[in-house]
Image (cartoon, rainbow, N blue to C red):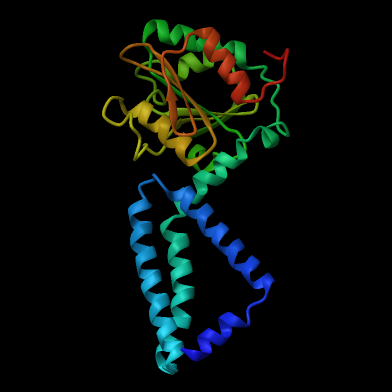
Length: 261
């Protein structure tokens, strides 16, 4: 106990600054995870870590060498476990960071496809043809494109409508748009797991929310049952969009150059 007291008394101002910086880092981690489905898991892990720290403190005070050696290795395992358990939440936070305007201004699209896309969406909504369209931004969607049929084609209104027409081989999947090209069709997206929309929406909408949770993609949905147009961004779903609102949101979210659309 006396050695621990001497250690505290010998601390200099820069040591206190160091402790404050570490505390700030942990506060940021807790802020990221608070409110997510991982919050309860985090509380359990914090309890274990506090208990482990107390045991290590006592072992160090009473010179319990074997116990100290065990807990020196425990910290490495705890850090690796922390990264594995909360990887989804950290990935989402990094995605949200990449969506900040200061970063988005570095990437703009020409948006030459937008008029054809809006025309196809309007006609599919009128005829109640279901559709799921993802727009790639900074996070690559290659892993999801690989689940479908590669196209790498020019985007046109007729092509989009043909893909989503009933009884065609690719109509149940999604299409992925990268820049001004249609990258792939018939793609499969992950379903949203913790969304507030889970009880109210079908598979297409949940896939849109799921992909927008996992990546920074913008995902457009046309409901097969109602013809309602929706847009998923960052895990949130904006429903009931008209053509003007849809065009405005796509220009803003995809950073399309002014005058291109």
